[in-house]
Image (cartoon, rainbow, N blue to C red; front, side):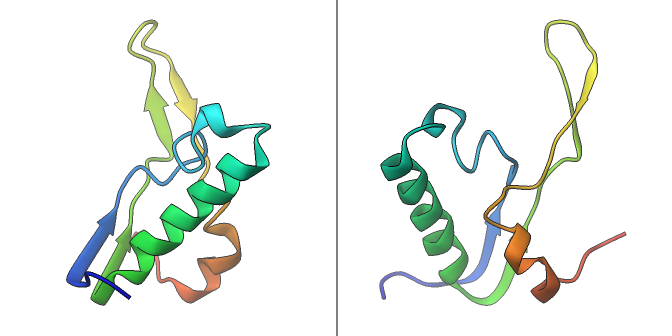
Length: 84
């Protein structure tokens, strides 16, 4: 299957990054983003960490905006444990 690593960390796993904001409306690009996310997750041999921030501060106005975990993770959430 290719290169594998003991530990894999996928960070910033929020909608707008996975899938990329610019992929919206382009099914081929959405499929490619889903494939890349899957490949990243399947490279882990021992530990897989999926990280995301529930909120993000705007660099321009300083306001806090909420973020959602990527839609690619929603069907997989029951298989992951969460940290407090």
